[in-house]
Length: 179
Image (tube, rainbow, N blue to C red; front, side, top):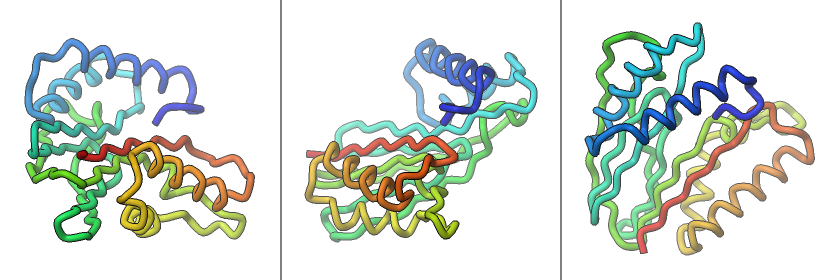
């Protein structure tokens, strides 16, 4: 979530990406803890990095968050989409930080949505926000589509919501479908 936020934000994204590449395999919460130390050492002033990490192994999904919006998971078994909010502060906020994580199932037909705040906070012409319940509803109604098609529907809905106006924040959408 750094597009349009200037060179320092772009540098922070690059530093974080390099940090991820250099990490050994570890749990998502430990990855965030290690990345926090890197970001804190670089010290780009007031800049902070929000990041979600999802690890999928078979039918297990491990999630952790550093100040990001909720995850959404469509569960094929119950035909319902749930919001999973994991508390966590952005990387670089403090020297010693503990990050929560959850482990849950991720079965065939399930859909995981990881979305930056740019979509939920996109304003229409009246100033109303796109909002998280709308995102959850779209994921619920499009769960039978491919991950690429779900992403396309979210983008189309956002474009219609914005009525051709430029969104003040960038939008990042990651959809993963267990097939």
